[in-house]
Length: 427
Image 1 (cartoon, rainbow, N blue to C red):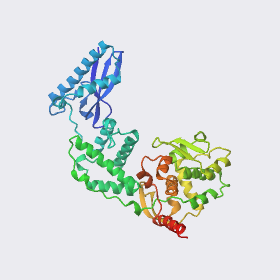
Image 2 (tube, helix red, strand yellow; image 1 turned 90 degrees about the vertical axis):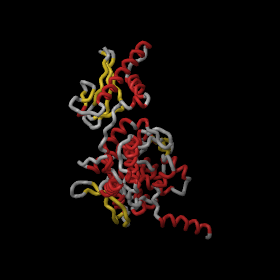
Image 3 (cartoon, one colour; image 1 turned 30 degrees about the horizontal axis):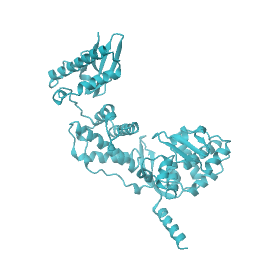
Image 4 (tube, one colour; image 1 turned 135 degrees about the vertical axis):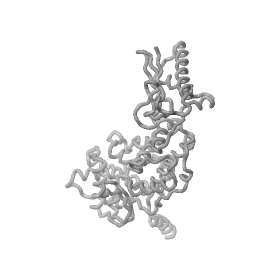
């Protein structure tokens, strides 16, 4: 005999309520109801709240649960007689059909009792993100969901053992979150702005779910200005010094330098040039690869220095190293190349308590070099020399605004472009 059960999985509060439909050995399938309950208050064996819990409108809720079960039975009987396949997709469709009822019947479903911000954010990502339409009228893609999940982890680090309630998230708290991401996580101002927008995004979603919020969360949040912190790139003369550095005495360092050259002249992220890239991606003087971060397919011509790296190794790529080791050693390589002018920047350090935090100050340039310098350098060195549209396509950016974000030429360097133009025009 077919049986319908309503149950929770795990101990997180709130937890999604699932519906299980089983019929002996014929099938045993489960689907989400998109309802949320406190698992401590739920009795899986009875498919209802525990007797000891006082719930408002309990009789109506019990009636609602019974209606859901009856609806599944009725839809099953009809589907069985028509010879439909009874599987997980069918059950999910049956649940969705039940909830697609007039508003007066929907009011009998469970009213979510969210209190804490992180609990709500996780619930929304699990239950609502797949059907959310962006401002461009497209569905939220997997990459965007990953970014929202990353933000939730950042917020958890920020709150520590203290759990912030949704109604307590206000402009003052978001200012503190911004400072935390700058001082303790080492994020750039542009990244902090994106995460603050994600923090507000979940508050917007809570508001649409009729959850009480503090309206001051929409106040302007202080974020340190981008131009106050220089993110260094390597110009072509500096790259030449790295390329020409004699490392014949150290094969391991030589391999890291050659991988560095590939990154500097391909603009690929470290997840691609130091992990994913292999010789099969290189053919007829081009690198063709689907990027790990965005899934964009890019085609990049081989720079003469990259061709030299391959010829030097009989057509093979240099040995790889861990990302951490790579980032440590490219600083050493830049130091050996006397790339040591003092510039204002931000680096991540580990304090006495073992926590990472950002430190802003004047540093020798080599100390601020990282794997992401590669992508920043190629964009900065090519900007203005080839059309923006072509540069976007080559490096896999979806819009020009994001590409320009990577251009890190100083005001003097920009002025030198105009100076060279005038010198050439009026010579």
